[in-house]
Image 1 (cartoon, one colour):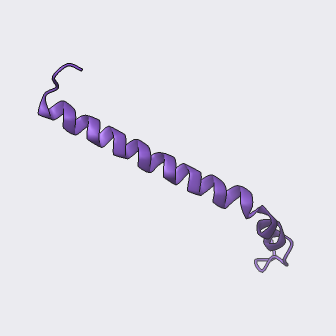
Image 2 (cartoon, one colour):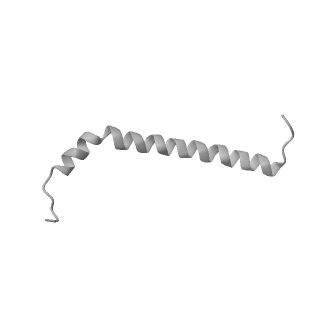
Image 3 (spheres, one colour):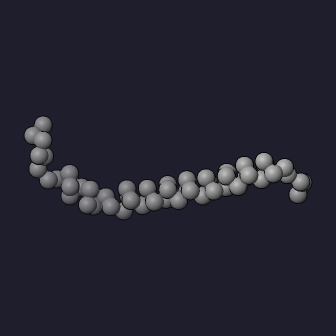
Length: 52
């Protein structure tokens, strides 16, 4: 592996952890949205309190 400058190591470090953070947030979001869908339909069937 070629020698990298310290700035490139810092950028690689930031890129790696931002990717890890983004993927974990996406996994959390999709689990929240898709696996709670039964409760979301129950909430939507309640009477609309805004009377629109």
